[in-house]
Structure formats: C-alpha cells, structure tokens
Length: 255
Image (tube, rainbow, N blue to C red; front, side, top):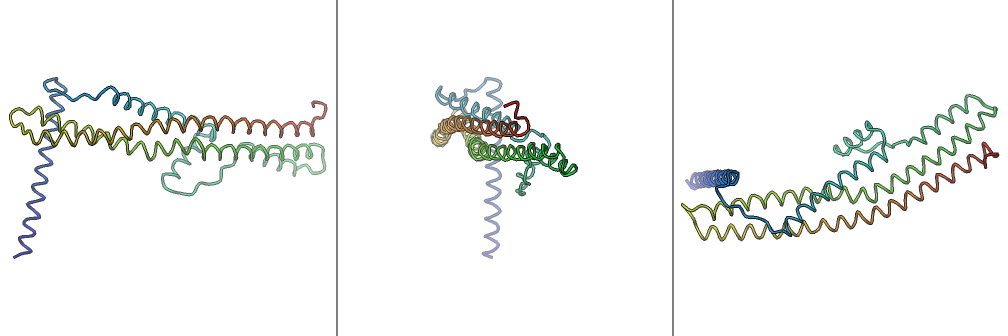
C-alpha cells in the first residue's frame, strides 16, 4: 500500500511539473507575441549592458576570423584542415603533418639518389638539407602559434563562449518571465512579480560578470598578437639564414 501511494505521489508530482512547465511555456509565448505586436512592455537593458553584449559578440567574431586566418596560414591545404578538425572532434590522435619544405626536401633527396656521383646530385643534396631545415622552422613556428594565440582563441571559443551563451539564454527567459508577471493585469501576483524580478536581477548580474571577462580575452589576444609578430620575425630571420647558406654553397658568385 505504501509503495502504491509512493508511486501515486510520484506520478502526481511529475504531472504537476508537466503542467507547470507547459504553463510557463505558454506564458512565454504569450509575452513574446505581445512584444512582437507592441502590445506589452518589454524590460530594456541599460546602456552599459548593451555595450557589453555588443563587445562580446565582436570578440567572438574577431576570434573566429583570426582562428580561420591563422589556421589557413599554418595549414594551407583546405582538405587537411578539414581532416584535422574531424580528428579533433572525435578525439583521434593527429597524424604528423609534413610541411611543404619537408616534402620538397624528400623529393630532392630521392632525386639525388637517382644520380649518384654527379654535380646535380650534390646540389640536390645541399638543397634537400636546406629545405629540411626550413621545414623544421615551419614546424616550430606552427607549434608556437598553436601554443600561443590559437590556444587563447580556442579557450574562448570552446569553453567561455558556450557558457556565456547559456547564461544569456537563461537571462532572456527570466526577462520574459518577469515581464509576463508584471504585465499580467488579470492575474497579477505581486509576490510572483517580486520573485521573478529577483531571479532576473541575479541572472543579469551573473551574465554581466561573464561579459566583463571578455575584456580579459581581448587583452590576452593583444599580447599574443605581439608574441606572434616576434615569432614571425624569428622564423623569417631563420629562413633567411638558411637560404643564404644554401646560396653560398650552390652559387658562390651570387653572395
């Protein structure tokens, strides 16, 4: 008997939860429809919060654009970029990526083996070693970008941004609930209005705290961009040294 009563109460509670959820859903649809047709008042966010929203959206846009540009610099082949994205999504280990210069070094080495003891074989071997060093520099530069600015951007896009969007959706729903409660003149419940306002204010505060953290991300990106510029300078300087040594070996008259 007790077990039967427990099941009956559990069913009643679930049924009540269903009706409560359905009621909230209907109320929200009603409020949204009234807002669309301009028949009900809508709570407006203050100017500071609106600016925070706009700044967060712009930060997201900048991060996605930067990531796309840097990814295409590190991995020019679009098919390879898609492959890397898929392997990351399925948590598969990434295959070692051979840089363009390394591929050229392998080709030059293979050609040198085909013509042993010839002048062109010597030149091909010298070129292969230089290209191999260039490939190593390319790998180091790509590693530094992934560990630096791309890590900052990925943290924002994959961790912070989804959390922020979740809190913004909560805020929008609580704002609708509050506006419905205060605009419902037929069944206006002051206690319910007060509770809805308190829940909305708490969620607004939490969302504002997250929005303000976007400034930290922008500052980190600014620092990372400066670091990337330094890394590029070292990378190009290293490439210049490698090619100067190669030219000195294969064409001394040019030096």
